[in-house]
Image (cartoon, rainbow, N blue to C red):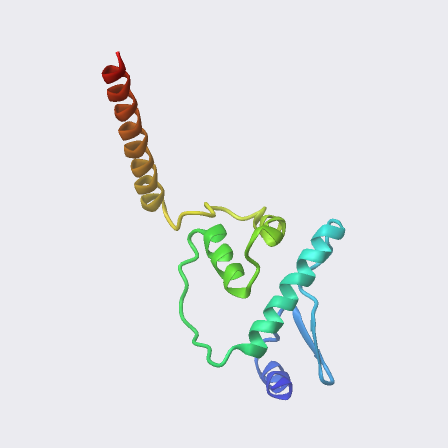
Length: 136
C-alpha cells in the first residue's frame, strides 16, 4: 500500500501532512504544537486514524457537508473512537479554531431543540402552577 501511495505521489500532487519513508508512515502535518497537551492530542488523533485505517474493512468516498466545521469534526472524532469524558478536552482542543456549533448540524436543528426545551419548560411551569392552585 505504501509503495502504491508513494508512486501516486510521484505522478500527482503530493499528500500534505503525510510522508512515507521505507515502510514507515509519518504524520508531519500537525505543525508546531502550542503546548504538551496539544502534542498529546495530536498523538491520540494520529493513533486513532491509524487504528481505523487498519481495522476498516471498506471505505467509500463521498461528499461531506462541511458547512458546520465543528459538528462535522466532532462526528468524525467520535467515529474514530475519541468519544467519552476522557477525550472531551482533546475534542475541544481540536475544534477550538473552527466555526459552527458542536451539537447541531444546522440552525434549523438548534431552533427545533430550543422549541422543544421551551415547550418542556412551559409544561413544567403549568404543572407547578396547577399543583400550587390545588394545594391552596
